[in-house]
Length: 325
Image 1 (spheres, helix red, strand yellow):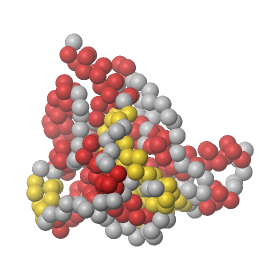
Image 2 (tube, one colour; image 1 turned 135 degrees about the vertical axis):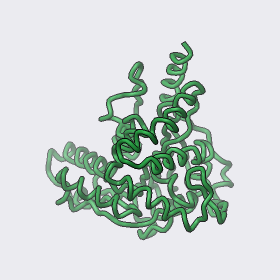
Image 3 (cartoon, rainbow, N blue to C red; image 1 turned 135 degrees about the horizontal axis):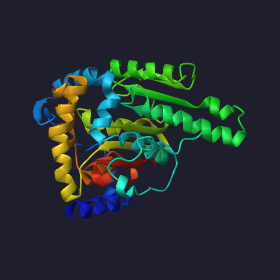
Image 4 (cartoon, helix red, strand yellow; image 1 turned 90 degrees about the vertical axis):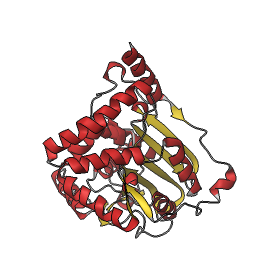
């Protein structure tokens, strides 16, 4: 009975969009007032700031070839639906009822895409997106919108579309390029692969209509610097969207999720990828990531307005968004 009640509360939580977690207007002007330290977390360990990037790089070099399997394990396959939600443009959230924990994995990336609502002629930056999961969906969404409007004729606006995939790890980018070729994207002129650091982007000020980062921001050394760079490269009216594994807010399910995270995921990671340590870090990094309200506050302190977040599956993942005005 307790588990059933928790599942009901979880379904309700996944449908609830949270608003009102905004700072006073004065806080928006203080987006350069961030906390800095000479030590940072790597999972549950404290390491020097100059060490973290190397350690995280080693993790993702290790798991690059099994990255999709990793995300399937971390999210029970839900990450695909969440990314769709970020890009697709759908406005409603569908309750999953008895399939709450294991819905059809073909739908979840659209949760990410829906909030972005891509359009022909868009300049979009997907950071920490080396495998191309989000970028491919953005391209397909734009093609779908454009071809419906023009009955299949390529428009000048569509030709102006450009999606940049930026990742600090060359191994992840190679996985994405290989997947692009397998999907027939190798001749897509609108798709570029760029090795770069989320904390020091190479793109010009005010050059992007949209910015997404999925399952990446918790791995940067300075979250506040990554947010500041996102704000810098976006045009006025541009939208920031972050999909990240977060903090569960349903008590009984939280206990179950903790057991799954710390006992099952590292063990299966060792079995599937031969790398228990990397999967252990990834689980720990989720617990060290700021809670939903705190991260929303950080986004607003970076200068964004209309900041909000949506919990999915009781907080296993959250989509945060903000607009540069």
